[in-house]
Amino acid sequence: MAKADALFERYGRHHRNPLNKALHWICVPLIVWSVLGLLWSVAPLAAYVALAAVLAFYLWLSVPLALGMAVGLAVMLYALTWLGERTLVVSAAVFVGAWIGQFVGHAIERSRPSFLEDLRSFLVGPAWLLGFVYRRLGIAY
Image 1: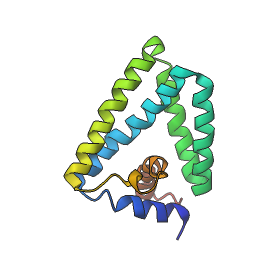
Image 2: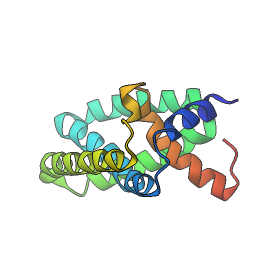
Image 3: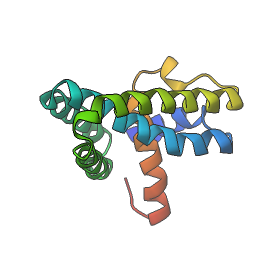
Image 4: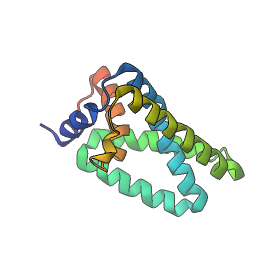
């Protein structure tokens, strides 16, 4: 079993309820975007360093996943440039709101968030969603 599949299976055990999954489709990308925005607000270099580290993890998982995540992260970074001086405030508000959504989903699921067992889940979550898209499109990862 590929590294990605093993991590996706473990992550998926905490995300079976359809409402929890739907909330994750909304909240996971928003959390990624808001963390990127918070880092960008502190120092753009911090955001680039974090992106490089995150992409190295995705490369370790799978080249196709890393390429897809690179495109998604580039779009998110571009969207941040539209906010200007409001980046910190908007990113912080989105971060808080998206985490509330995540915890609501896990309360509905009656499952603890997977990051409580494995911190890599913070990075696995976005790739898990991309894995769904890839499977739907018939793209091997």
